[in-house]
Every structure is written in C-alpha cells, then in structure tokens.
Length: 343
Ligand code: GLY
Image (cartoon, rainbow, N blue to C red; front, side):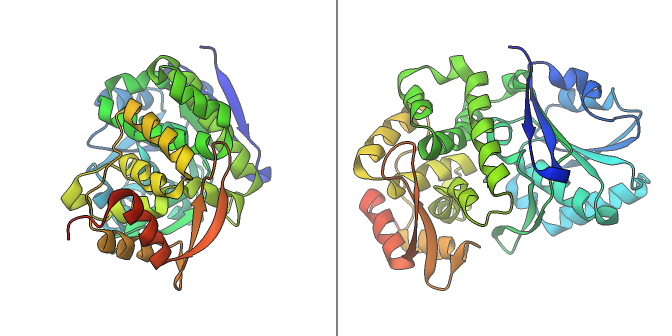
C-alpha cells in the first residue's frame, strides 16, 4: 500500500492524517521531532513502537500510564502534566501519543491544557484508535464513572496511522476496533457495509481503515464540535456506554459494548444483517446485563438531557436519523433485543 495522506480541513486547525505501512519508522518525515517530545503511552503498548518513535526525536521522555479505561482519570492527568513540567516542556515543544484511545485521549487533553495548549501528535496503535478516536480532536478523561466528561476539542497537528503495528494485537482487540468501522459504514456508506458482509475483513484491513477515516473526516469537517451531524458517530454508544458501565461484571471492551449498543437501535432488516456481520467479526450479539441498570447508567451519559436522550437510529444501511427518546423507550428497545437480563 502506498501512502494515503488524508487532509483534515478545519481552517487554522487543519492537519494531515497519514495512512501508510511503516510510517511510524519514518515519523520524522511528517512530524517536527527536532524539539522536546513527551511520548505518552500505556503499559499495554509494545515497547518497540515507543522506541521507534523515541529514536527519531531530538530529545524524548516517556510517560507510561497503566493500561485501562479506569486510569483515564484526573489523577493520571495530573501525573502527565507533572511529567511535562519536570521534563521542561516549553510552548514550542510537543506531546505525542503512542497507543490506543486511552493514552490518546489523555495525552491530547494534557497537551490542550499545558501552557494553554502545546502541539499534539497522535500515533494510534489499535484498530479502534486508528479508525476512530485518534482523529477529530476529542480529548478527555473520565470522572466519577462518567466517560469523557472532562475534556476539550483539541485537534492534533498530525496523525500517523501505521497498520503494521496492528500485527502485535490479539484478535479480540482487532474485532473491538472494527465495531467502530462497522458503525461508520452502517450510518454513512451502504456499500462499505455490504463489504463487511461479503468480503474477508482481515484481508482488506488497510481499505477498511481508510474508508472509516474518510467517513469520519467528512463528518468532522462539517461539524467539528458535535452540534449536529457528528452526533451520528455516537450511534450505538448510548446503550453501549450503559453496558460498558457494568464492565466490572461483564468484562466487555468498548467496541464490544458499542456492537451490543447498535443492535437495538436498528430497524429489523438491518438488525439481522448487522447481527451476522458482528458474528462474523467475532463481536458479541447477546447481552445478559440487567436492563434497568444499563438504562440508569446510559441516562448518566452526558448525552442525556432531562428525561430525553438524543438517540441515533439506523432504519436501513447507509443512513441514520435522530430521535429524542425517553429512558422508558430506550429500555423497551433494549429489552426487545436482549430481554430484562439478570439483576
Ligand atoms: N468517536 C466519535 C467521535 O469522534 O465523534
């Protein structure tokens, strides 16, 4: 595969997304590494990817946080800022994330806040962060069990996507990220959705990543701050976050929860098609979580307003619509697909 340079056109906040096998090893051709670079990563990211980037920096330090969403919090955020301070980062220096959505979100928010904003680069190393979370400028940490409730829109200066780094990921992590690519196809691109049905996804991974990036680029360029269209990218996330809040009991990953969160929000025909796609990819399609607890957690989600939740529904592949729903309506949808679940 040759390099695909996908420009994100956001006026003064524009940047390039470079999709190329091996690009991490030539990051210096795309990023300004002739300065202090704080690399933010986590304990689950193979050391070789961190070293590959560090070796190209004039002066690098590494902040390695513990892996896991529960560590995407204000304590870790403070530690990252302290490391930026002790490393002596100045306004002209930068932060570079190497890892999945957790270090990416935290590093971006720390870069947004330190000295009122220094340069941020993202080098995502999971499917989920390559197809979705590394682009678009959402940065945040969680607070009191509410995901991404403290954060900022802060666009990176560049994103380097190297599909070679996915070789070290276990199959479950690959499937986890593909849930977000399926989400984008289902809402925006009926043909791409059919490819998930008819083709072997593993054999066309670079194309899957590129298609998801191009969909997301188009959405973010039209609505960077999520006033309207970008809300469609939350498809599956309201129920998904509710299921994910019970993570300690069900052990499900974010993309797996999004997969489960999508099914009740589909029309019957597309739901059947989606179910088969999820099964084919190794994603869950059954959920035993208690309906009342899922809905209570979903209603805590920041997208809930009063008794109304702005839900995204997909009646057919390649399209979506918004509908304000009460928590009772959301619960009825959940129960119609998964039942009441165990209390
Ligand atoms: N992951 C959804 C968004 O970036 O808007």
